[in-house]
Length: 155
Image (cartoon, rainbow, N blue to C red; front, side, top):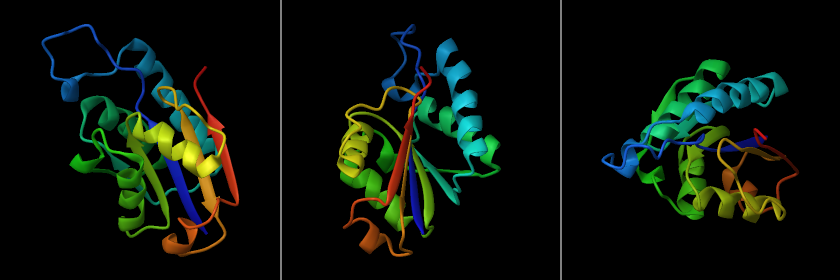
């Protein structure tokens, strides 16, 4: 089985205009939503082997909550910051694992979620979309529609 979880970073803080976009932290809502969504995924039994995250502070903080809930380390990948859907999917393929979580940004996350599901048109902050294929080969998986998928958002 091949599995992919897409997680858009939790809500970030726009309060300090002197911060570079890459350095924006989570706001109160983001710090509230991320551990809830992480625990929800952990409780679902959806298995993850590797967590890949954008290097942006809001993404890596979100990924940290998921890493703690799932008992996994987070691998940071600069290429995921502002990445298009194709780069997000390729990072999962190149990870060397068959069950991967990618934590990153829009619009790439929404585009990839729509491409894989045919229905998810927007990934709000801290949304989690999971996809599974009944194959152990990413090349086969990425050429087929997933056998199943789920979508959850904090609200």
